[in-house]
Length: 374
Image 1 (spheres, rainbow, N blue to C red):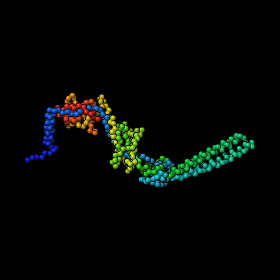
Image 2: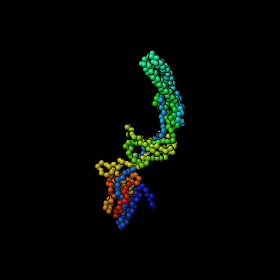
Image 3: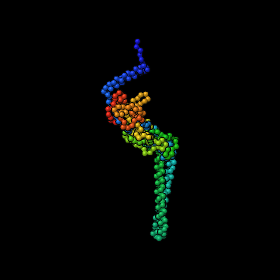
């Protein structure tokens, strides 16, 4: 009676290994008659491509934090977060009693300066007539003329101060600088506003950008990227219309800010603050290409994945020497696009078999050099 054998049992594995050995022996006997030519490649140092992926955030191209320009209590907040606003629309009103008092003071100063100018003008005209009649000296006339000019300057100063008071009173009404949406409010009715204190933040929807903080050590690698991809929150993969790298690095985090402008169609549905994934694809990995200490060659070479032979923890390749192959142990790295990085064990210019299985058969010989490994 037959017995079922599990595919993971030692007997089954041994049976598979025996069949593999018999097949290799059969192929070997055929190879002894005719010989097997195995294609080889010349190993060359190559600049490896790497992808740098970082988390970023969505930011509006046109965004402003509207701040108070005068001090006083907030009497009312006319909008809330999420509201649409038009340019010039009232956003908040600040207590204007202090600015109104300043305006009244300016009006009084202007009136006083006008009265002083009228008196100085009358005195100048009287002194001019007396000078013609010989009753006053030239010095008295010069003094009256100087006094008239001084009062003219005083009136101009008072008028300028009144204009400033009018402008300050207008700042009590906080208005929208452009059409947009209110992103957040920072003050409520009753809060104390002061010059420079934010009242609310608004942005213009429709045009967004992805902002990512790139480590300064990867800046050169990102600049050499052949393509920049942005994964949006909804899963879409888009490319930026324009990229801007800020000229300085943050002194604390040692990062450089990159701003990637999105097309209006790609910005649809995005909100400021959402997370995105930014990928710099096809960037040159300079660390992998840098020579190691005490070595005259690059730190890693690349061979096709089929050229690498794995036996347990051992990795090896068949190196062509004359008309035969020699098995050589190597230290391999990650696989990228069908290519395996060889970190140690090979030198540039050596020929290796592209098919390690065929090269391991008896009477296998190099067929010649093929195209170099990328």
